[in-house]
Image (cartoon, helix red, strand yellow):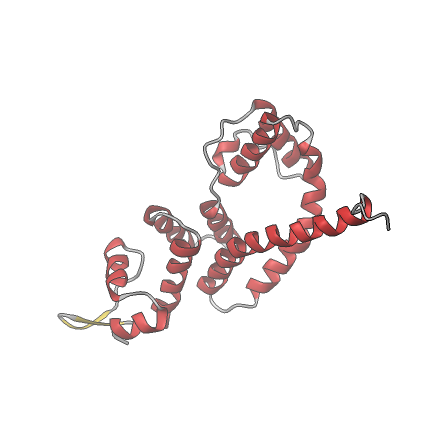
Length: 212
């Protein structure tokens, strides 16, 4: 297919496709003439992934390039590639880390048998957790880490559903695209459903004030 058809199939404007080509986010097509190139289904899949990373993940072009480099590394397992994507789409923010919150994160990971997290800033995920616990401490909730184990156990059910969902997809690009979209949209869905769960549990445990 030519670039115009690639644009229609992927939903990405031609100008944006050409930009991605210049930035190395999309492999070049096979030249059929000095000014024409042919593209295939692999280009469609890669464009969908790049679009998910940019539009859903809100990643910079440099971050997208890093993700794609990790994906295309032949020696890495799909599991490791998914981990690299999760790191890329996690934004730790700029909260100043509380040393006690850092210790809480290190202790939590040690209890889970994940090894001691010596420097939480080496991982966006652990940094984000330390930032969240630091924010909790800053407003007087020093015991928030007590929720980490219950949260983990509950979220394993969600994680199982996530992985089962993406594992049914076809290529590695399709699986990784599913992880990006599923994680980011899933975060928004979980937030809303959590509010509903809070309302139901609160009504049962605390009561709604109606006297029933």
